[in-house]
Length: 248
Image (cartoon, rainbow, N blue to C red; front, side, top):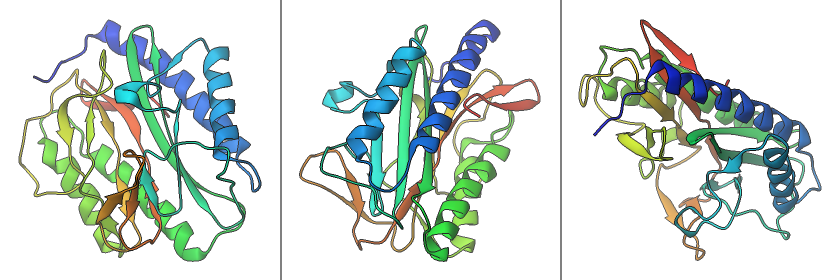
C-alpha cells in the first residue's frame, strides 16, 4: 500500500530534508585525498549528533555503518573502514539517511576526489542529470514507470548503463515504503502518481555493464566488470501541481 502524507507530515519531512541537505554538503566539503572512509563516517555521525537526528542506516537489517561510502567500482552499500583511504582520481558515493521526528529522509551523491578523468566526470554528471530527468516525471497524474523510463533513456543515450538490482522507494515513517521505483522500464506503467506521495528516487549508473556482484561482507555491491559506478538520490514530495525536492 502506498501511504500518502498530509501537509503536516510533509512539513516535518521538509525540515528533516533541510537538515540532511546541510549534513551532505558538509560531508562533500570534508572529502579530500588521504582520509579514510571511517573518518568520513565519524564526521557524518558527529554532524548527526549536532543536528539531533539519528542515522537511518546504523543497525538497519544489521548494517554496521552510519552512512554508506562506496568508492570507484563499489555501486552501493559500501561499509566505512579504517583501511580504505581516498586517493587522487577516485570517485566516492556517499549515501546517508536520517530519522527526524519519526520520519525518514534519504539522499546520495557521488563526488570526485581531487582531479579525475574526463570519463569519470561525465559519469558523475550524467548520473546526477538522470536523477533530475526522473524527478521531472514525478508529477501527479503520471505513471510510476515514467520516472524509470526517463532515467534509463537519458543514461543510455549518454553511453552508460543503469543498475537493475536496486530501486528507489517510497519513504516516510519507514525508510523503505511502497512503491518500489526501478531506474529502468517502459513508460506509462505501474501506479498513477498522486499528491501526497513522498519518494526517494536514486539512479545508480555504471560506466560499463549494468551487472553487479556482492562482496563477502554481504552488503557491498560492486560492478561485475570492475568499472566505476555513480549514485545520486533525493527525497521528493508530490504537491498540488508541483514537485518539491526535500533534500536539496
